Image (cartoon, rainbow, N blue to C red):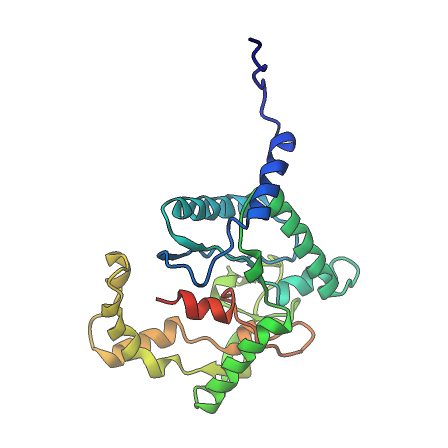
Length: 278
């Protein structure tokens, strides 16, 4: 009886396309809303599509893929979505460097390319829940949320000092200022300017945020133990004001002077938030 020769080398181009096609046909990673299984939400960082994906991206996404596959084998209904943090300065700067190419054209081309590369790598997502933060079907909800905060008195305008990059013509977070210079342009000194900008009154919820840490019984103790101690609510409000109150303009101003409202933390869809929330 003759034996088939053993494969002497692993050739991914010969093996992986077959199984990737099988996974796609079977919908391996499509989450079922009506499933009776215990649910597991596996959310990875969404990339900026202002350039090519790198080995660093794949390192992150392979780990998320391994976790999603393992939880499926353990009997969980896994929601493993993907999306693109595609709104704002990185996309605009990248497009300008390429001969004033329109940011939308550059961004959508990169998204299509990145999606092909992730598929080639064999990483499985529920692509039915893909989000792209520069598309109206996503940022309309960010705008809705901002208007709701404005109606409730939680959004207000005020003058405040900011770090200003004269090249990008936008404000910078403190972490983006390195030795007094812009992190994107090491030869450019950052200016201090007073600008009128939008703020969100996170401090109105300081006591509630701290008190409700007791409800997070599944959080690691080292995280929950970060709860401030000392002078109680007043100290906590000052602490939260320094560490988390952020002017909206820091993520909404663009080099061309337009104002946009865009969330930096992305969820897969309103349905996913409702279904998978704990």
